Length: 286
Image 1 (cartoon, helix red, strand yellow):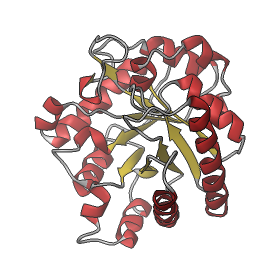
Image 2: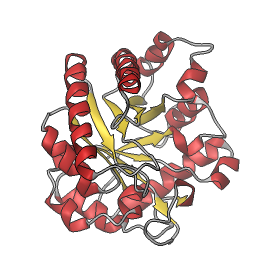
Image 3: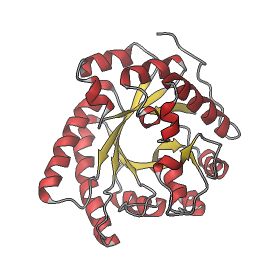
């Protein structure tokens, strides 16, 4: 198992420079870089070349740019903006060595028929896939377990990527999103594990299906998600890639950033220890 840090976990109490320093110090293998806030802030005083140099000279590596948001069911003008944004992300990902770009489906109060959602997702993902191919970058689609997300269950998201049927298009499997809208473990068990590109680990307070929000997330192993069931299937099916810890808990944003990053690592390793061993080093010095 490779350990990854998603920068949402320290969204309000850290920045990219600190996240990199502390994650590298505490032995994380990968980081998911937030492109909507932490990366632009970093680029106010640094360059992409600076970031690429950091990754070349340290243990931690970039797993993904997170994220291209709301890519489906957009107006023609909005779609042009999505394509331009994706072009820039491809160039950035290639320069720093990131393997994936996370793509998040539209969240909206508008009711859209499922067939229309699928048709739009398939069309856009096919185009993004063709754009990404020369760069060697993969697209990881992250369904969001909320009633207002157009793709909000594992089954729906998996059907979409299977229909796209391109090697560089797969899924982010986020344990919170899987739980939050009642996705089915047996359906997950039937899935092609090669279509799971990234696993997000988290946990949640025990609110009813459909009422959960990102702020309800807690440290892995301290909540109501059946992490044992999920990770037993991942292990059984041969998943051995990155497990990325992603939380959005307001009270955790009040913690010292290094403390939060260390706690995220410790709780993640403990939560998956029945199924995976973590062979990374305890720490690295800069």
